Length: 101
Image (cartoon, rainbow, N blue to C red; front, top):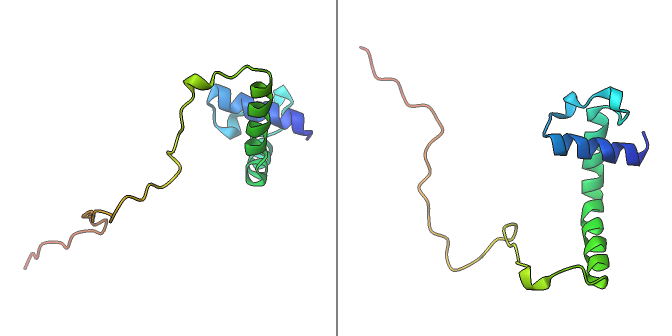
């Protein structure tokens, strides 16, 4: 399956918020499984990170980015500030049954 058609299938699934297995074969994008595998392979290869960098560079060079409205998102970076506060965890194990004797 050509990369372009797989990309179209990936975008169709994400845009329409449907399960991969519900991608209609009639659209010609290949199966949902094929599109998902290609997405996984591209993600692991860093294709989308590279694409993001290229788009930012091109938009910046064209003066199309308004950096005064930019913000930094650190949600994927762990913040280390002092000692971690211990948190009491709930047990996921079952409780012992009450004795019936």
